[in-house]
Image 1 (cartoon, rainbow, N blue to C red):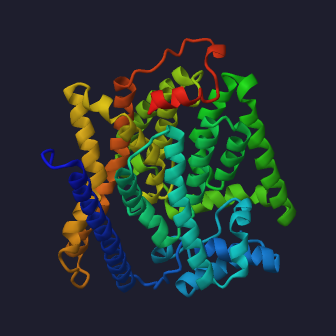
Image 2 (image 1 turned 180 degrees about the vertical axis):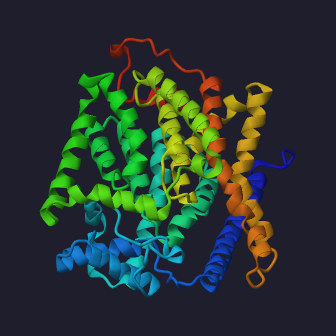
Length: 451
């Protein structure tokens, strides 16, 4: 490949990327249809394919149009009838499954309110395009945060690979609203690096529509702003004002909803059997050991980075590490769509590719392994779609699940690469006084230095 002209190499690589991405789309459609057919034939209940949007759409519709409590028993019963044709009985083992209740904070309704006046078939089309826009904007905002400039072929390949990656394509196929808060987090990061701290705080407040993914992130930003309160306090006020406005507006819509929401969360965790990514893979004693070590590693990095400006490499490393740790240890539904939060870690590897390749042999080998973890799912998808999926059999579904299974290695690989990046990339001392660390970008010279 190196003997070929640059444009030829770029064209060949772009063709490979497009082939792999098209294969991933075809693979996903085939495997999801086969899995659904297999589950429907083996289950007592015959669930309809209504996507993850339906409970939010129906709950919003009932509250805004009919003034009914979306957390109420009656609305939950109607949702279960829509999905399963009957109200689920938790005393029966075969019916202890996802109860399809409205489980978001009430102010999530404000973000999808226009959909409540649409029939569901129209709402799902509109929401699909909203999620596509969020996925595209997510990439743009993280590129802006990292000040990463790529050539047009590289940028095209990046967008194609991200939009057809397992996390994004699953979000789009099941209409999972996860891309909305992920986009808010990316927007907050881009706003912080641009010096718009109040806007960043407002976007962080909006991201709490998925409260579990914001816990570690808010802890990191609280440490960062307290380390230079005078210059960074706008972040706190933006968050406080926006969250207070959302909560109070929700209280006007449904008085007392906050008193019942903790019980909603508890029930949701119970019937969906939520577990952290590590908890779903590792046995209990080993899980706690790995989780504590990972948490201590990230906490140490955040503490050392707390005085750094937002446009610095240590800040980007800390933020990416917090998001990667969130994917690993925060209890959530064990699904690949959470891996959208790993995008800044992937972009950091791209940004510091030269430093990583010039490092020691262990780092170079780890970098190659990380790249393999990132590109293996689409490459396996190419192989999978080369063979027709015969009528559902266990061994066929297991064989076809290889690309999906390969994607589970990415959170581990991303977290490991961030640890290596911390050592491979030269970082400023954290012992500088606060006044010597400006919280706004340092201008064109700084941008050129970072890129």
